[in-house]
Image (cartoon, rainbow, N blue to C red):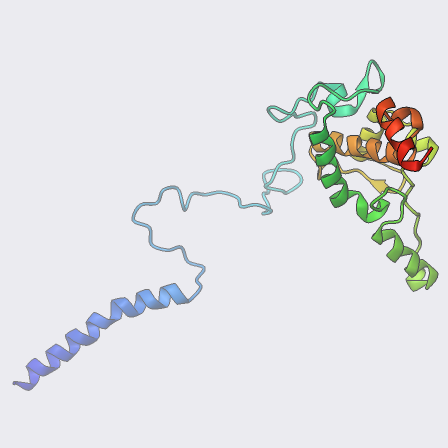
Length: 225
């Protein structure tokens, strides 16, 4: 085979290896250059990315804050009873129509209570949750000047007598050192927690009159009375 022919074949083989080598390098190496797009699909349009600066506005930000008073579609929240715990200008004493008081509501409230409230208020609501216990240990050891305000017991008479609307407001907006949970807990779930808190309070402050008459007689027989 002529030498020139051999050289030509070798050159063709080397040349054929160049494109796949370039493709492999492009896939493995980061680059600030835009990839070749035969169909742009607006991929390379002039735009400002999130958190970038924009000299067009006085504050220099590309991302614009919502206009004051803006309400998202479907979030007008005009029902004061459901969204604010207020009825006729005072704290609501009944549950809103959207969340009727049922056993399922109480069970849902217990689940949400155990997630959001139990760490501080404890399983029975006496203000003795694990966070409180750990904080008190740090206070007693004087670790870095730790200070702590113990969570309220949900069974104190002042709290036990609060209307359901006021309890809902406390969960929503917080009170004293307790932060509000409006952004973490949906409205319906906040009412569910209220239902469970009221059931929890009743369980620790029940009266004989709260028990149906037929069950009272059954309890007396069990106690031998």
